[in-house]
Structures are given as C-alpha cells and as structure tokens.
Amino acid sequence: MNSSQSDKTCEDSKTDNIICDSLEKYKLYFEHAPMGYQSLDINGCFIDVNRAWLDMLGYDKDEIIGKWFGDFLHPDQKEVFRELFPLNIKSTEIIRGVEFTLKKKDGSFIIVQYTANIGRDKEGNFKQTHCIFQDITKQKKFEEKLIKKEHDLTQLVENLQNREKTVTLLLNSVHDILEIHDFTKTARKVFDSCAKSIGAKAGYVALLSDDGEENELLFLEDGGMKCTVDPELPMPVRGLREQAYNTGKVVYDNSFMNSEWVKFMPEGHMPLKNVLFSPLNINGKTVGIMGFACKKGNFTEDDARIAEAFGEYAAIALNNSNNLEKIKTHENELETLVKERTSELQEKYNEIEEFNRLFVGREFRIKELKDKIKELEGKINHR
Image (cartoon, rainbow, N blue to C red; front, side, top):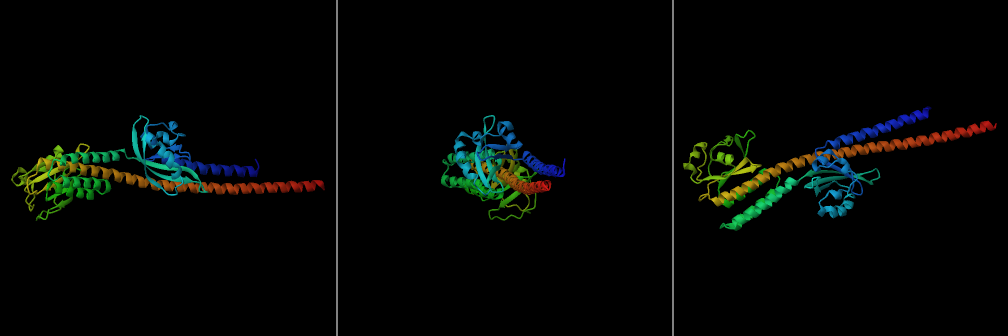
C-alpha cells in the first residue's frame, strides 16, 4: 500500500467514527426517552420511532417503519393529516399543541398531543420531522367528566329557588378549572362559588399532609369574624372533618357549638353555629377538604349535594393540575434535549461536509500532480 492509499484509509476511518459516534448518541437518546418520539419523511411515512412510542401503542417496530402515519389515525382524522402535513413541514418554528387520536394495536384509541420540529439540511431543505408526544387521554376524560358534572348539576339546581345564580356559579367554576392551572387559585374560585351558592360565610380549603395526619391549609376565609387562633397551629384530622375523610362523603352539623365536636376547637376560635365539610376525592381516596361554616339558616341536603359537586370539581382541578404540571415539565425537558441533539447532529453534519470538501480537493490536486509527472516522463523519454 502506498502513502496516498494509507492516508485515504485513515481519513475514511475517521469519517466512519464521526458518523457512528453521532448515530449512537442519537439512537441511545431517543430509544430511552420517557415520551413517545417519531420521525416522518416528506411523504408522512415513518422513518423511526422509539421504545416509548411502541410501548404506548403496542406495535412492533417492523409494523411501523415505512408506513404512512395516517394509517394509524382515527378514520375521521386521516384527511385532516393529509391536508395539514404538507403545510406543517414548511414551518421554521417549533409546532406545539397538535392533537391526534391514534389507534393502538389492540384496536383502542388514545389521544396524544404533539410537539414537532422540522429537521433540515445545510441548504435548508426538508430532511425529516422530529416529533415528541404525550398521551393526554386522561386529561380529555377529565374534561368530559367536567362537562358531565355540569350537566348533572344543571339538572339538580332546576329544583332550587336560586337556580339561576347557582348555575352561573357552577359554569364559572368549570371555566376556571379548564383555564387556570394553579390549583390554589382554582380552589379559591371554586370555594367562593360554592360558599355563595349554599350561603356559607366562612370556611377554608386544605389538603391532606403526606403522612395523612394533618390538614395543610391553602387559605382561610374568616368572613370578617374575629378569630385569634395561632395560624401556625396544626390542623389534625379529627372531629367532624375526620368523618368526611373516613367516609369520603359530605357531612354537616347545624348545632356545632352544642355537639361533641366542639371539644376539638382550639382556644380563640370564632363561634361556629353550623359546619359543613365536603371532601376532595381522587381515585377513591380523600386527599383534601373544603370546610364551610356560619350559614344564616341551616345547611340542607340540597346544600350537601351542591357542596359535594363543587368538591368533585375541586378534586378534578387538583388532579388535572398535577397532570398538567408533569406534562409541562416533561415537555420542556424533552424540547430542550431535542434542540440540543438537533444542533449537535447539524454540527457533525457540517464537519463531515467540510471534510469531504477538503478530501475531494486533495484528490484533485494529486491527480494533477500525477498527470504532470506523466507529462515530464514523456518528455524525458523522447530525449
């Protein structure tokens, strides 16, 4: 092997190492990402998917690669995708919030939300899509549950004297739950709406501590009444509110100051004519409570049903807030990583392009020298 052949072999080996290293990093990252990842070609056919994608939908990889993405969509969305995809791949910005309903291998469907970035070559031409997605089926079910609760409660308040006011408050609460992701703010609005609807003057919202022994206060409404209890004093789960925690149902007492529960009131607490507790239940477990007090008249079974419904709203808001927080955290992390990997791959691609340019130039110069040598040899031989 001569010197030029040896140099060429070394350069080829270096190029291969750069490519293999980049591809290995790319493969490891997307194979082990916690969210589903897919890449489509210019025709909308699968180039790659990761393990999370396969696990979520139940397919094997060889059932996916090369297939048209629309074949895995709900029939109602196939033509929508066919029309939108050519427009989306022209985008120069990250595409967020696109929702599709995907068909799993077992025939069931899940609703997913995509975040996508378009990969391009050095000249800016389309190469492939990079998409991550989150299963939001549960979130959608929460929204459906809210709509159902709205319907159920609308039927309930038709028999109440103050039906118009109550319906308005309930609808406002649904809107607040869907629009506000900060649970403390949502809980305050739900509490205020419920208190206004059932005529309670004071109360609070609290969540169960991790050890299940105490209430952790989110906020307190004293209704303008004097209360000198130390706000740092713990709120153990006991008395009437313990019954709400244990049963998962609304409980109330219209003669609280004469009940057995009054012994648990701390010194300096304002007098409570009546008390009602509405639990916040998630998956069969009470995780918090809304307390109401000081209604001018007595709490009634209608009040209990309305408070139960608002408690369910608050529980849905809490669960939804937790899920949205997790989704947002994962999405932000993966979006950052996708940008980093895309940038890294682009840099490696540029390095390879530069190497090829130099290598081709070098080969051309070697050929010129060889031709020159042959020309000189010909002149010498003629002499």
